[in-house]
Amino acid sequence: MTKGSLDYVELEHDSSLDRLAGLIHEHCGIDYKGNLHSLAVKAGARMKELGMTCRQYIEHLEQHPAEWDALIEAVTINETYFFREEQQLEELVRLLQAYDGQGEIRIWSAACSTGEEPYSLAMAIQESGMFPLSKVRIYASDINRKVLRTARHGFYPKHSMCFRRTPEWLREKYFDAVQGGYRIQEHIRERVQFFQFNLTRQAAGMLPEMDFIFCRNVLIYFDTPVVQKVISNLADCLSAGGYLFLGHAETIPELPPDLRMINAASTFYYRKEGGSI
Image (tube, rainbow, N blue to C red; front, top):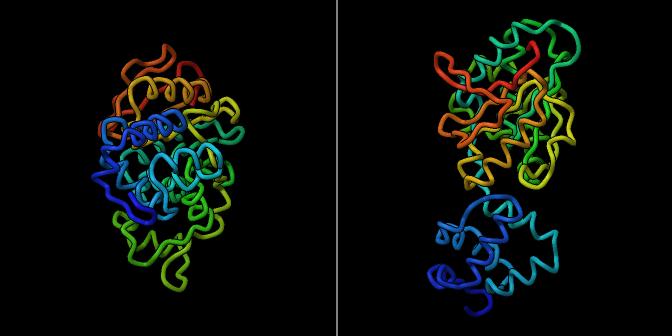
């Protein structure tokens, strides 16, 4: 490859690409080792931008750790939308009926992308009318700093696909129309605390105990050992009696001893032994 050019086929067969896949797996658990073509396309765009070969880019990455933010932006998938897997939101509201009214309810959206999930959680709870939203604190994290900036701002373009499951009346009720799109209203935004978090390298125990954790459509990008590590980490962060929701296509190869699966009418989730909520 010459500087400023990029041949994805050539890159795909570069032994350095396999090394880059290993570094990504070590850094954040995403498994590209069996899909080097996809990695060549996604990371290759960043290499072309910098005018580097894969070998040069790895050296650059090792010498400039801040480059990980740009690489993570390139290789992570952030497709999401409001009220995704709505049956789980309905189950959350049903479970909250057992809330005893004491203390704050803590919910963690553990891979929040551009914010649609945590904001959907807040809107669903508000719509339930069971208690003031001020009783709820939603924590929302992602490894990708760029999507977190979008999430914090809470602005979504008018014709974005993120609204494909949002009824018009809900959009009118919880969003303010601004030029070019809609922004989540402040009373919803202020209930969500966004922060950067690496599920495979940081201990969930650094966070307060959570009553509910939503970690949906993330585990599908990890291999089995990483899945087990992440699930164990999340289980440690759950309060006794707390609940863990995964995506419908995700399963846990081996459940931690303190988690058990619960099958509801139209979804499934996991409960940590003990507690009352």
